Amino acid sequence: MAADQEQEQEQRRRLLDVASRFPLPTGCRFSYGTAGFRADGATMAPAVCRAGILAALRSLKLASAAVGIVITASHNPIGDNGVKIADPDGGMMDQQWEPFAAALANAPDPDALLQLVLQFVKDEGIPLGGHHTAQVLLGRDTRPTGEYLLDAALQGINAILGAQAIDMGILTTPQLHWMVRSKNKGIKASESDYFTQLINSFRRMLELLPKDKGGDELAKKLIVDGANGIGGVKLEQIKAELSGLDIIVRNSGKEGEGILNHLCGADFVQKERVTPHGFGPEDVGVRCASLDGDADRLVYFQMSSSSDNKVDLVDGDKILSLFALFIREQLDVINNNGNQVDKSLPARLGIVQTAYANGASTQFLKGLGLEVVFTPTGVKYLHKKALEYDIGIYFEANGHGTVVFSEDFISQLESLSNDLSSQAANSQYHAAMRLMAATQLINQAVGDALSGLLLVEAILQYKRWSFQNWCELYSDLPSRQLKVKVVDRSSIVTTDAETKVSQPSSLQELIDKETANYTQGRCFVRPSGTEDVVRVYAEASTQVEADSLAKSVAHHVERLLG
Ligand SMILES: CC(=O)N[C@H]1[C@@H](OP(=O)(O)O)O[C@H](CO)[C@@H](O)[C@@H]1O
Ligand SMILES: [Mg+2]
Image (tube, rainbow, N blue to C red; front, side):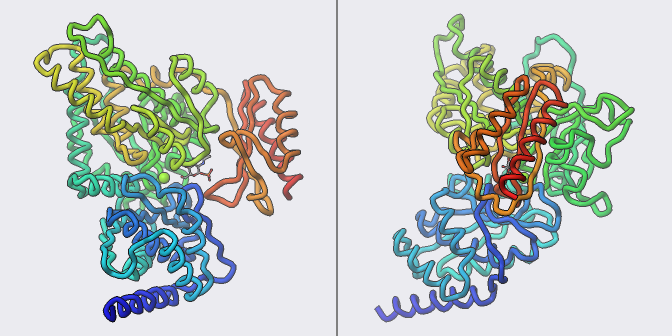
């Protein structure tokens, strides 16, 4: 008993101590947004330290399963930084804990922080006190504030008795998510295990290419814009082992090549539709890809003319469409009744998008007879929805997405592959093996630009499609995104997967009225979860109309909300 009391005292002392080491600057208010806490990197230490405490508590709550902490601000400017927590399955932290995360980050002083933790631990039945262990894996991107914030996170984790922090180093965000997931599955979870899985499954995909398909081979050359972030660094490490591809990394993050996310990266290319820094007329007609600063987003582009820097863009919606076509084709081959072997693989295939998905993509996917559903913005919503299917494919238009397969589906696929293995020349067998390789290649924890890129490359080779073939799958409707600064963005409340404003109610009426003036008009507004702005999105049949619709709605937002 005395020992227990001593531990309890020690636990309290540690929490008070760490909180006093990271006082909350006055006027600072953190909210757990679309992707965790984000702000100017120099102000983030208190929030990151408290995220460390939270991650350790989460691991304690979940029977000591490994939990992850990623220190990154993704595509945001180099001065920003952020922190988010990965759950044991490698996905985003359960949203039920977000209010506690925010309350903890905003606890005004050490006493308030201690009381908050003790109350939460009691309410949630968390075994705090040193009898149980907790494990937290940490990763960070290349930002200059990363190391300092990592230290803050370590101090937060170490403030919880029994918690162990494992620094996995400088990583892409999806690498850390993959490591957390793998560790909890009992699979080897080091960086080299991650690379081995990617390289081997990519090779496997190429070995399974049909030998007798006509058409041109895909050009081997691929130029990748690494956003001067961690993705380019990692790609440089493995590119020599990616057979069948000749990868050139630009904006690779090497000294002197440029600034993280500045005039480069997936967010820049997708929003501006121009070439990133470091690309020029000599690249016309070459297939190019662009990653964001922490390499969880991927878009493709190609310059069609040397006279300007405009690009033909393949965004997340078209990557999704490519994946959907490929997976559906394999399922069709497997389930085609004309096959020699009477085996089938029933699978519910679901496509998950957000309101930012180009209307033309949704129409295209629905036209294929696929089930398409919508969620609010943010991977935490899309991923969760995708898990409801045997195979769920989700993407945000900005290039963040992946494919998830249910355990049940994978085991059925495995047993089917075994049954068919005696018929190794059979097309059914090949289709099953291709799907198996895809489940290995794609990062099922979270969207991953590197694994996504390799799956794209394998599918383009499989289909013998050029960039142009892919790009012409459908034509995007012209669209425009604007940001509006308002006094309090939280005064906008949305509903119907963010497609409608419920408050202030007059705003939706105005949006409807404006939209009705445009052919194929669609428009919605929502408060950003990562920046202090309201976002306006508009689509219409011409660029001029899309611009004009976005502008007039932005004007209403400004007028109503100041
Ligand atoms: C329109 C847009 O691109 N929004 C992005 C952006 O969220 P906002 O809540 O819109 O700021 O950052 C998120 C995190 O990276 C990403 O998931 C999301 O798609
Ligand atoms: Mg990112």
